[in-house]
Length: 216
Length: 216
Image 1 (cartoon, each protein chain N blue to C red):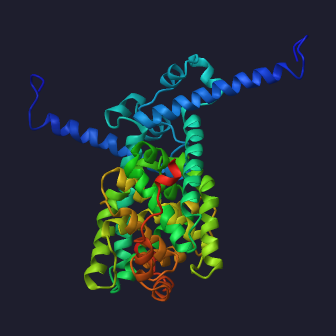
Image 2 (cartoon, rainbow over the protein chains, first blue to last red; image 1 turned 90 degrees about the vertical axis):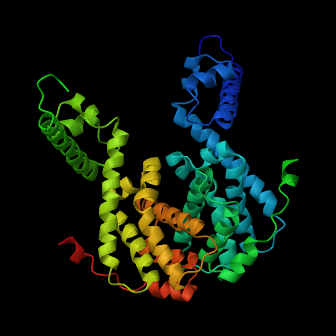
Image 3 (cartoon, each protein chain N blue to C red; image 1 turned 90 degrees about the horizontal axis):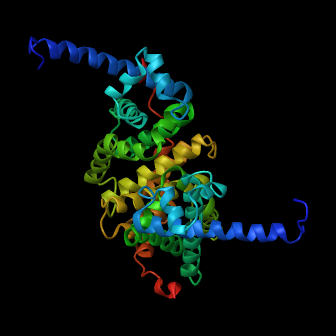
Protein backbone atom coordinates (compact mmCIF):
# COMPACT_ATOMS: atom_id res chain seq x y z
CA UNK A 1 0.00 0.00 0.00
CA UNK A 2 3.10 2.24 0.12
CA UNK A 3 3.40 4.62 -2.84
CA UNK A 4 5.21 2.89 -5.69
CA UNK A 5 4.52 -0.67 -4.56
CA UNK A 6 3.52 -3.05 -7.28
CA UNK A 7 0.47 -4.62 -5.65
CA UNK A 8 1.08 -8.07 -7.11
CA UNK A 9 4.75 -8.13 -6.22
CA UNK A 10 5.54 -6.47 -2.88
CA UNK A 11 3.15 -8.35 -0.63
CA UNK A 12 4.16 -11.60 -2.27
CA UNK A 13 7.84 -11.09 -1.66
CA UNK A 14 7.20 -9.92 1.91
CA UNK A 15 4.90 -12.84 2.55
CA UNK A 16 7.49 -15.24 1.22
CA UNK A 17 10.20 -13.88 3.48
CA UNK A 18 7.78 -13.95 6.39
CA UNK A 19 6.93 -17.58 5.70
CA UNK A 20 10.61 -18.48 5.53
CA UNK A 21 11.32 -16.88 8.91
CA UNK A 22 8.32 -18.64 10.43
CA UNK A 23 9.50 -21.97 9.01
CA UNK A 24 13.01 -21.40 10.39
CA UNK A 25 11.58 -20.67 13.84
CA UNK A 26 9.45 -23.81 13.70
CA UNK A 27 12.39 -25.96 12.55
CA UNK A 28 14.52 -24.61 15.39
CA UNK A 29 11.78 -25.12 17.97
CA UNK A 30 11.15 -28.67 16.76
CA UNK A 31 14.85 -29.55 16.96
CA UNK A 32 15.31 -28.01 20.41
CA UNK A 33 12.11 -29.53 21.83
CA UNK A 34 13.17 -32.94 20.54
CA UNK A 35 16.69 -32.61 21.90
CA UNK A 36 16.14 -31.04 25.31
CA UNK A 37 12.40 -30.91 25.88
CA UNK A 38 9.92 -28.04 25.81
CA UNK A 39 10.39 -26.79 29.36
CA UNK A 40 14.16 -26.45 29.03
CA UNK A 41 13.88 -24.40 25.82
CA UNK A 42 13.76 -20.60 26.00
CA UNK A 43 12.51 -18.33 23.21
CA UNK A 44 16.01 -16.81 22.95
CA UNK A 45 17.43 -20.24 22.16
CA UNK A 46 14.86 -20.75 19.42
CA UNK A 47 15.68 -17.42 17.76
CA UNK A 48 19.42 -17.98 18.09
CA UNK A 49 19.16 -21.48 16.64
CA UNK A 50 17.01 -20.09 13.81
CA UNK A 51 19.45 -17.20 13.28
CA UNK A 52 16.64 -14.67 13.64
CA UNK A 53 16.46 -11.57 15.85
CA UNK A 54 14.88 -12.17 19.25
CA UNK A 55 12.16 -9.59 18.70
CA UNK A 56 10.99 -10.99 15.39
CA UNK A 57 9.80 -14.14 17.19
CA UNK A 58 6.83 -12.07 18.28
CA UNK A 59 5.93 -11.18 14.70
CA UNK A 60 5.05 -14.83 14.29
CA UNK A 61 4.02 -16.21 17.68
CA UNK A 62 2.45 -14.50 20.69
CA UNK A 63 4.27 -16.69 23.19
CA UNK A 64 6.29 -19.82 23.67
CA UNK A 65 3.01 -21.61 24.35
CA UNK A 66 1.82 -20.69 20.87
CA UNK A 67 4.83 -22.10 19.05
CA UNK A 68 4.56 -25.22 21.24
CA UNK A 69 1.00 -25.59 20.09
CA UNK A 70 1.93 -25.32 16.40
CA UNK A 71 4.80 -27.81 16.76
CA UNK A 72 2.51 -30.13 18.71
CA UNK A 73 -0.24 -29.85 16.13
CA UNK A 74 2.17 -30.68 13.29
CA UNK A 75 3.65 -33.59 15.28
CA UNK A 76 0.18 -35.00 15.91
CA UNK A 77 -0.69 -34.72 12.23
CA UNK A 78 2.52 -36.54 11.33
CA UNK A 79 1.79 -39.26 13.91
CA UNK A 80 -1.75 -39.58 12.62
CA UNK A 81 -0.41 -40.14 9.11
CA UNK A 82 2.03 -42.78 10.35
CA UNK A 83 -0.80 -44.62 12.10
CA UNK A 84 -2.98 -44.35 9.00
CA UNK A 85 -0.17 -45.91 6.96
CA UNK A 86 0.33 -48.65 9.55
CA UNK A 87 -3.33 -49.59 9.62
CA UNK A 88 -4.52 -49.11 6.06
CA UNK A 89 -4.20 -52.83 5.24
CA UNK A 90 -6.07 -53.98 8.36
CA UNK A 91 -9.62 -55.26 8.01
CA UNK A 92 -10.57 -55.54 11.68
CA UNK A 93 -11.62 -52.19 13.24
CA UNK A 94 -10.52 -53.55 16.62
CA UNK A 95 -7.03 -54.17 15.33
CA UNK A 96 -6.88 -50.65 13.87
CA UNK A 97 -7.67 -49.18 17.29
CA UNK A 98 -5.23 -51.52 19.04
CA UNK A 99 -2.39 -50.64 16.66
CA UNK A 100 -3.03 -46.91 17.00
CA UNK A 101 -3.00 -47.05 20.81
CA UNK A 102 0.01 -49.34 20.92
CA UNK A 103 1.87 -47.05 18.54
CA UNK A 104 1.42 -44.03 20.80
CA UNK A 105 2.38 -45.89 23.96
CA UNK A 106 5.47 -47.42 22.32
CA UNK A 107 6.37 -44.03 20.85
CA UNK A 108 6.45 -42.52 24.34
CA UNK A 109 9.05 -45.04 25.33
CA UNK A 110 11.16 -44.72 22.17
CA UNK A 111 11.04 -40.96 21.83
CA UNK A 112 10.37 -39.44 25.26
CA UNK A 113 10.70 -35.83 24.10
CA UNK A 114 8.00 -36.38 21.53
CA UNK A 115 6.01 -38.24 24.19
CA UNK A 116 6.25 -35.35 26.64
CA UNK A 117 5.29 -32.95 23.89
CA UNK A 118 2.20 -35.02 23.14
CA UNK A 119 0.97 -35.37 26.73
CA UNK A 120 1.68 -31.74 27.59
CA UNK A 121 -1.03 -30.11 29.61
CA UNK A 122 -3.76 -28.03 28.24
CA UNK A 123 -2.35 -27.51 24.78
CA UNK A 124 -2.17 -31.24 24.41
CA UNK A 125 -5.77 -31.75 25.44
CA UNK A 126 -7.08 -29.20 22.99
CA UNK A 127 -4.81 -30.14 20.14
CA UNK A 128 -5.11 -33.87 20.64
CA UNK A 129 -8.89 -33.91 20.65
CA UNK A 130 -8.82 -31.72 17.54
CA UNK A 131 -5.95 -33.26 15.58
CA UNK A 132 -6.34 -36.92 16.46
CA UNK A 133 -9.96 -36.66 17.50
CA UNK A 134 -11.29 -36.86 13.96
CA UNK A 135 -9.17 -39.92 13.18
CA UNK A 136 -10.07 -41.63 16.44
CA UNK A 137 -13.75 -40.93 15.98
CA UNK A 138 -13.62 -42.25 12.42
CA UNK A 139 -12.06 -45.53 13.63
CA UNK A 140 -14.57 -45.72 16.47
CA UNK A 141 -17.55 -45.17 14.21
CA UNK A 142 -16.31 -47.67 11.67
CA UNK A 143 -16.22 -50.31 14.39
CA UNK A 144 -19.66 -49.38 15.66
CA UNK A 145 -21.13 -49.44 12.15
CA UNK A 146 -19.67 -52.88 11.46
CA UNK A 147 -20.96 -54.25 14.76
CA UNK A 148 -17.46 -55.00 16.03
CA UNK A 149 -17.78 -52.34 18.75
CA UNK A 150 -20.69 -51.90 21.13
CA UNK A 151 -20.80 -48.80 23.31
CA UNK A 152 -23.63 -47.00 25.10
CA UNK A 153 -22.26 -43.56 24.26
CA UNK A 154 -19.65 -42.99 21.53
CA UNK A 155 -18.73 -39.57 22.95
CA UNK A 156 -17.95 -40.95 26.39
CA UNK A 157 -16.10 -43.90 24.83
CA UNK A 158 -13.91 -41.45 22.90
CA UNK A 159 -13.04 -39.46 26.05
CA UNK A 160 -12.52 -42.68 28.05
CA UNK A 161 -10.08 -44.14 25.57
CA UNK A 162 -8.24 -40.88 24.79
CA UNK A 163 -7.86 -40.05 28.49
CA UNK A 164 -6.67 -43.56 29.24
CA UNK A 165 -4.07 -43.26 26.46
CA UNK A 166 -2.76 -39.93 27.69
CA UNK A 167 -2.29 -41.13 31.27
CA UNK A 168 -0.71 -44.43 30.18
CA UNK A 169 1.73 -42.47 27.97
CA UNK A 170 2.52 -40.38 30.99
CA UNK A 171 2.99 -43.45 33.16
CA UNK A 172 5.45 -44.79 30.60
CA UNK A 173 7.30 -41.46 30.45
CA UNK A 174 7.53 -41.40 34.25
CA UNK A 175 8.89 -44.95 34.18
CA UNK A 176 5.92 -46.32 36.14
CA UNK A 177 4.75 -48.95 33.66
CA UNK A 178 6.35 -52.08 32.28
CA UNK A 179 7.39 -53.03 28.75
CA UNK A 180 4.01 -54.56 27.87
CA UNK A 181 2.06 -51.43 28.79
CA UNK A 182 1.12 -50.86 25.16
CA UNK A 183 -0.47 -54.30 24.83
CA UNK A 184 -2.28 -54.14 28.16
CA UNK A 185 -3.53 -50.65 27.44
CA UNK A 186 -4.84 -51.77 24.05
CA UNK A 187 -6.68 -54.62 25.80
CA UNK A 188 -8.36 -52.12 28.13
CA UNK A 189 -9.38 -49.89 25.23
CA UNK A 190 -10.90 -52.81 23.31
CA UNK A 191 -12.79 -53.89 26.43
CA UNK A 192 -14.25 -50.38 26.71
CA UNK A 193 -15.35 -50.75 23.10
CA UNK A 194 -17.24 -53.93 23.93
CA UNK A 195 -14.90 -56.79 23.03
CA UNK A 196 -14.80 -59.69 25.47
CA UNK A 197 -11.58 -59.90 27.52
CA UNK A 198 -10.56 -62.93 25.43
CA UNK A 199 -11.10 -61.15 22.10
CA UNK A 200 -9.44 -57.98 23.40
CA UNK A 201 -6.37 -59.94 24.48
CA UNK A 202 -6.14 -61.78 21.19
CA UNK A 203 -6.32 -58.60 19.10
CA UNK A 204 -3.99 -56.61 21.37
CA UNK A 205 -1.34 -59.33 21.15
CA UNK A 206 -1.30 -59.54 17.36
CA UNK A 207 2.12 -58.58 15.96
CA UNK A 208 2.33 -54.91 15.08
CA UNK A 209 2.45 -54.04 11.38
CA UNK A 210 6.02 -53.23 10.36
CA UNK A 211 6.69 -49.72 11.52
CA UNK A 212 9.98 -49.49 9.68
CA UNK A 213 8.29 -49.64 6.32
CA UNK A 214 6.52 -46.35 6.98
CA UNK A 215 9.73 -44.61 7.94
CA UNK A 216 11.67 -45.21 4.72
CA UNK B 1 17.92 -19.01 68.89
CA UNK B 2 18.01 -15.24 69.64
CA UNK B 3 19.61 -14.32 72.96
CA UNK B 4 16.96 -14.35 75.72
CA UNK B 5 14.50 -16.60 73.88
CA UNK B 6 12.86 -19.24 76.05
CA UNK B 7 13.40 -22.28 73.84
CA UNK B 8 10.10 -23.93 74.78
CA UNK B 9 8.03 -20.77 74.36
CA UNK B 10 9.19 -18.55 71.54
CA UNK B 11 9.17 -21.10 68.74
CA UNK B 12 5.78 -22.33 69.90
CA UNK B 13 4.15 -18.93 69.85
CA UNK B 14 5.81 -18.07 66.56
CA UNK B 15 4.84 -21.39 65.08
CA UNK B 16 1.25 -20.89 66.18
CA UNK B 17 1.03 -17.48 64.56
CA UNK B 18 2.67 -18.87 61.46
CA UNK B 19 0.16 -21.70 61.27
CA UNK B 20 -2.72 -19.25 61.65
CA UNK B 21 -1.48 -17.09 58.79
CA UNK B 22 -1.01 -20.16 56.62
CA UNK B 23 -4.54 -21.34 57.41
CA UNK B 24 -5.95 -17.88 56.59
CA UNK B 25 -4.17 -17.91 53.24
CA UNK B 26 -5.49 -21.39 52.47
CA UNK B 27 -9.06 -20.44 53.47
CA UNK B 28 -8.88 -17.38 51.23
CA UNK B 29 -7.43 -19.33 48.32
CA UNK B 30 -10.05 -22.05 48.67
CA UNK B 31 -12.89 -19.50 48.70
CA UNK B 32 -11.54 -17.55 45.73
CA UNK B 33 -10.76 -20.65 43.67
CA UNK B 34 -14.27 -21.95 44.33
CA UNK B 35 -15.90 -18.64 43.47
CA UNK B 36 -13.94 -17.51 40.42
CA UNK B 37 -11.60 -20.33 39.49
CA UNK B 38 -7.87 -20.75 39.86
CA UNK B 39 -6.74 -18.93 36.75
CA UNK B 40 -8.68 -15.78 37.57
CA UNK B 41 -7.21 -15.56 41.09
CA UNK B 42 -4.03 -13.52 41.69
CA UNK B 43 -1.79 -13.88 44.75
CA UNK B 44 -2.62 -10.27 45.71
CA UNK B 45 -6.31 -11.19 45.92
CA UNK B 46 -5.53 -14.11 48.17
CA UNK B 47 -3.48 -11.99 50.58
CA UNK B 48 -6.06 -9.20 50.54
CA UNK B 49 -8.90 -11.63 51.20
CA UNK B 50 -6.85 -13.21 54.02
CA UNK B 51 -5.97 -9.77 55.40
CA UNK B 52 -2.27 -10.57 55.25
CA UNK B 53 0.58 -8.53 53.76
CA UNK B 54 1.38 -9.43 50.14
CA UNK B 55 4.99 -10.32 50.93
CA UNK B 56 4.17 -12.73 53.73
CA UNK B 57 2.50 -15.03 51.18
CA UNK B 58 6.01 -16.07 50.21
CA UNK B 59 6.86 -17.08 53.77
CA UNK B 60 4.37 -19.89 53.30
CA UNK B 61 4.23 -20.74 49.61
CA UNK B 62 6.85 -20.43 46.90
CA UNK B 63 4.30 -19.64 44.19
CA UNK B 64 0.65 -19.62 43.28
CA UNK B 65 1.19 -23.09 41.89
CA UNK B 66 2.24 -24.31 45.32
CA UNK B 67 -0.86 -23.03 47.12
CA UNK B 68 -2.98 -24.49 44.30
CA UNK B 69 -1.33 -27.82 44.95
CA UNK B 70 -2.06 -27.72 48.69
CA UNK B 71 -5.70 -26.69 48.13
CA UNK B 72 -6.03 -29.39 45.49
CA UNK B 73 -4.49 -32.00 47.74
CA UNK B 74 -6.88 -31.15 50.58
CA UNK B 75 -9.86 -31.11 48.21
CA UNK B 76 -8.92 -34.55 46.91
CA UNK B 77 -8.59 -35.90 50.45
CA UNK B 78 -12.02 -34.51 51.30
CA UNK B 79 -13.50 -36.03 48.13
CA UNK B 80 -11.85 -39.33 48.92
CA UNK B 81 -13.47 -39.33 52.34
CA UNK B 82 -16.88 -38.54 50.85
CA UNK B 83 -16.53 -41.45 48.45
CA UNK B 84 -15.39 -43.73 51.26
CA UNK B 85 -18.49 -42.77 53.25
CA UNK B 86 -20.72 -43.31 50.21
CA UNK B 87 -19.36 -46.75 49.52
CA UNK B 88 -18.65 -48.24 52.94
CA UNK B 89 -21.92 -50.19 52.98
CA UNK B 90 -21.44 -51.66 49.51
CA UNK B 91 -20.43 -55.30 49.18
CA UNK B 92 -19.72 -55.43 45.46
CA UNK B 93 -16.25 -54.11 44.53
CA UNK B 94 -17.61 -53.26 41.08
CA UNK B 95 -20.28 -51.05 42.61
CA UNK B 96 -17.67 -49.29 44.77
CA UNK B 97 -15.66 -48.39 41.68
CA UNK B 98 -18.78 -47.35 39.75
CA UNK B 99 -19.97 -45.07 42.56
CA UNK B 100 -16.55 -43.47 42.96
CA UNK B 101 -16.26 -42.71 39.25
CA UNK B 102 -19.85 -41.52 38.99
CA UNK B 103 -19.33 -39.26 41.98
CA UNK B 104 -16.39 -37.47 40.38
CA UNK B 105 -18.09 -37.05 37.02
CA UNK B 106 -21.30 -35.75 38.64
CA UNK B 107 -19.26 -33.47 40.89
CA UNK B 108 -17.69 -31.83 37.83
CA UNK B 109 -21.14 -30.91 36.63
CA UNK B 110 -22.45 -29.70 39.98
CA UNK B 111 -19.37 -27.81 41.11
CA UNK B 112 -17.38 -26.78 38.03
CA UNK B 113 -14.79 -24.76 39.95
CA UNK B 114 -13.94 -27.82 42.03
CA UNK B 115 -14.01 -29.86 38.83
CA UNK B 116 -11.54 -27.54 37.11
CA UNK B 117 -9.34 -27.60 40.18
CA UNK B 118 -9.31 -31.39 40.10
CA UNK B 119 -8.49 -31.78 36.42
CA UNK B 120 -5.85 -29.04 36.42
CA UNK B 121 -2.77 -29.89 34.50
CA UNK B 122 0.36 -31.21 35.98
CA UNK B 123 -0.41 -30.53 39.61
CA UNK B 124 -3.57 -32.52 39.18
CA UNK B 125 -1.77 -35.48 37.70
CA UNK B 126 0.80 -35.66 40.48
CA UNK B 127 -1.60 -34.96 43.30
CA UNK B 128 -4.38 -37.16 41.99
CA UNK B 129 -2.22 -40.22 41.56
CA UNK B 130 -0.83 -39.62 45.05
CA UNK B 131 -3.98 -38.60 46.93
CA UNK B 132 -6.60 -40.74 45.24
CA UNK B 133 -4.17 -43.30 43.92
CA UNK B 134 -3.98 -45.25 47.14
CA UNK B 135 -7.77 -45.39 47.48
CA UNK B 136 -8.25 -46.34 43.84
CA UNK B 137 -5.60 -49.03 44.02
CA UNK B 138 -7.13 -50.42 47.22
CA UNK B 139 -10.55 -50.71 45.52
CA UNK B 140 -8.95 -52.23 42.45
CA UNK B 141 -7.01 -54.81 44.43
CA UNK B 142 -10.04 -55.73 46.49
CA UNK B 143 -11.92 -56.53 43.31
CA UNK B 144 -9.03 -58.53 41.89
CA UNK B 145 -8.61 -60.50 45.11
CA UNK B 146 -12.31 -61.37 45.21
CA UNK B 147 -12.29 -62.45 41.56
CA UNK B 148 -14.80 -59.76 40.57
CA UNK B 149 -12.17 -57.98 38.47
CA UNK B 150 -9.87 -59.57 35.93
CA UNK B 151 -7.06 -57.50 34.46
CA UNK B 152 -3.76 -58.41 32.81
CA UNK B 153 -1.89 -55.57 34.51
CA UNK B 154 -3.23 -53.73 37.57
CA UNK B 155 -0.86 -50.80 37.01
CA UNK B 156 -2.03 -50.19 33.47
CA UNK B 157 -5.66 -50.65 34.57
CA UNK B 158 -5.19 -47.95 37.19
CA UNK B 159 -3.72 -45.49 34.65
CA UNK B 160 -6.39 -46.42 32.09
CA UNK B 161 -9.28 -45.78 34.45
CA UNK B 162 -7.81 -42.67 36.12
CA UNK B 163 -6.94 -41.12 32.75
CA UNK B 164 -10.39 -41.93 31.40
CA UNK B 165 -11.96 -40.26 34.45
CA UNK B 166 -9.89 -37.11 34.10
CA UNK B 167 -10.72 -36.62 30.42
CA UNK B 168 -14.43 -37.40 30.95
CA UNK B 169 -14.53 -34.83 33.78
CA UNK B 170 -12.96 -32.40 31.39
CA UNK B 171 -15.46 -33.25 28.68
CA UNK B 172 -18.26 -32.55 31.16
CA UNK B 173 -16.66 -29.25 32.23
CA UNK B 174 -16.33 -28.22 28.58
CA UNK B 175 -19.98 -29.09 28.02
CA UNK B 176 -19.14 -31.82 25.50
CA UNK B 177 -20.87 -34.75 27.22
CA UNK B 178 -24.48 -35.49 28.06
CA UNK B 179 -26.24 -35.94 31.42
CA UNK B 180 -25.60 -39.67 31.55
CA UNK B 181 -21.84 -39.33 31.11
CA UNK B 182 -21.24 -40.54 34.67
CA UNK B 183 -23.13 -43.80 34.06
CA UNK B 184 -21.58 -44.46 30.67
CA UNK B 185 -18.12 -43.69 31.98
CA UNK B 186 -18.62 -46.10 34.88
CA UNK B 187 -19.65 -48.77 32.36
CA UNK B 188 -16.41 -48.24 30.46
CA UNK B 189 -14.35 -48.48 33.63
CA UNK B 190 -16.03 -51.71 34.69
CA UNK B 191 -15.46 -53.17 31.23
CA UNK B 192 -11.76 -52.35 31.56
CA UNK B 193 -11.82 -54.21 34.86
CA UNK B 194 -13.19 -57.31 33.15
CA UNK B 195 -16.96 -57.19 33.68
CA UNK B 196 -19.09 -58.19 30.72
CA UNK B 197 -20.89 -55.27 29.04
CA UNK B 198 -24.16 -56.57 30.54
CA UNK B 199 -22.78 -56.72 34.08
CA UNK B 200 -21.06 -53.38 33.68
CA UNK B 201 -24.31 -51.74 32.56
CA UNK B 202 -26.28 -53.27 35.39
CA UNK B 203 -23.84 -52.10 38.07
CA UNK B 204 -23.34 -48.65 36.55
CA UNK B 205 -27.10 -48.06 36.47
CA UNK B 206 -27.71 -48.95 40.12
CA UNK B 207 -29.08 -45.97 42.06
CA UNK B 208 -26.33 -43.97 43.73
CA UNK B 209 -26.08 -44.19 47.51
CA UNK B 210 -27.63 -41.08 49.10
CA UNK B 211 -25.03 -38.37 48.76
CA UNK B 212 -26.97 -35.93 50.93
CA UNK B 213 -26.45 -38.06 54.01
CA UNK B 214 -22.71 -37.54 53.84
CA UNK B 215 -23.06 -33.77 53.59
CA UNK B 216 -24.99 -33.18 56.81
